[in-house]
Image (cartoon, rainbow, N blue to C red; front, side, top):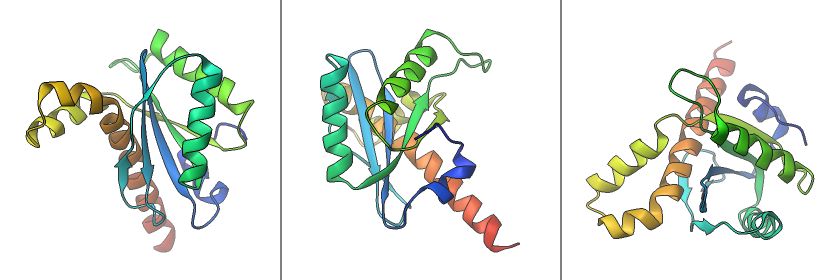
Length: 161
């Protein structure tokens, strides 16, 4: 399936399916999954990165287990809106995933998502050691929640027309 915009996602998503959010790091992949009503993002276990094939298989199993219908991929753009090496790595990861998956992918600007996730974990009094193991999935949940909120706004706008 192609890369689509968030505005096109409602038409591409089968009813009752969930959305997954990904935060691609150098050593780990943060994963979060929505509920079926597309209201709340729930962090999942962080996946340790290895070879792409193994990572893709682990993600495919996770997507199947949660009945994922589309993937929101965090795009780490720079503060000035330009794309650097990390954004290009995220785009390349999605291109490779598209060869193995029929799921549509949506890129979502993830500026400051890790900072927000870290602050939330600190507010919950999560120790520094535990934060390091949870930060990528918390960031994925933050990314996914932003997309879910946008979908809710799109639905409200469509119903008021």
